Image 1 (spheres, rainbow, N blue to C red):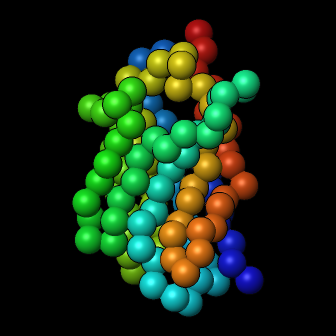
Image 2: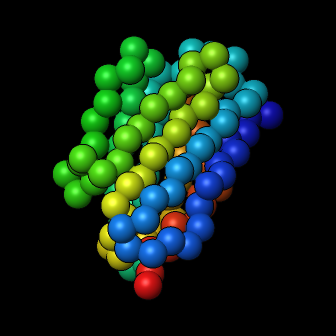
Length: 114
């Protein structure tokens, strides 16, 4: 059974940092890209950052320079380091793994508020 287990969300003040992780298990085929999406209330889900198996990364313009995505292929884990967080980063963050199909995590809440 495929599982994506996310951790690391929470409440932080503006300017603070949080680190998310997502560990995949039960996927026996090659994992290609690993991605983080987010969905704020009343908004569509959007791609925040992605990383290929080779390590190439891409970021949404709103997070470029503040967020860093990385992965550990051996542990099938993807990370998202979020620095200088802003109120508008508040959302549920979802891990996404692309293999023979796309898999989604359950989501973790990130709230940026003073």
